[in-house]
Amino acid sequence: MNRIPVSSLNDNKSKVNVKNPRCLNVFLNSCKNKATRETYVNHLNAFLKYVEKDHESLLMLTNSELNEIVENYVMFCSDNDRYAVSSIRGIVASIDKFLFMNDRTINKRKLMMFLPEEKKTSQRAITTNETRLLLSVSANSRSKAIVRLFCATCCRPEGMADLKMKNLESLPHGFTGIIFYAGHKHELQYFCHSEATTAINDYLDTRKQKGEEITPETYVFCKVNCIGDEAGRMSEEGIGSVIEHLMKSAGISRVKQIFSNPINI
Image (spheres, one colour):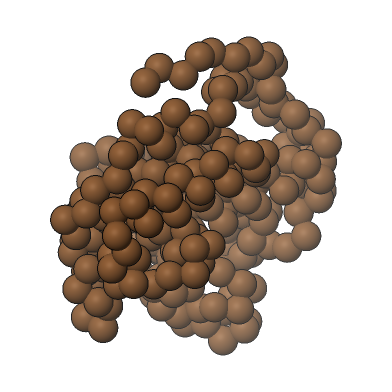
């Protein structure tokens, strides 16, 4: 019997931790989209770690101190090739929203002037041979399942991260029906071929062998050595990182051309 269950459109919104300080709860409740909330929290936590502050102590800074440490962090990100311009925009947006929701403001227009010149890329599709290369460098069943699902549906990492077992439906001849962004206005339905179905089932079998109980609420992709609850959910950044690592390992470049555009403030 196929291990993929019948799908459902219901999806529970993640709950705010009541142990969080109020300033963080206010921020979390202002982020209506689950994927956006997770991304903003990750950006905010990275910023707080860099400046060696917690949520409450950050808000206790004077206006000049607050603007200075945020400016320094944005300049740090801008000077680091690890951060794309779009990522820095997201970082600024997350910090700005946290402060705004707690009645503090920063000079966002000034911060955007620190961004480096934006590079725009044009990417081509992955070929069948390159898909084989990605699978050949995949070290485990999770990576293989991610590659198969990515190539079969072209879904963004955020859609794959939120995917639960109840969003998958077994179909005849080894096909699988999948609903991404279930219950949201961007809900989409896709169908996977038997190769993707087999890869997903092999990955799920591996988790079962380690003692995990797979339920309709279980996330399809989870962190390594962290199973069974919300904390085990693999983030969109984690899925994107897996794909990027495999692309580099396989020596695949999708960039067709690179050109620069000025930043409009």
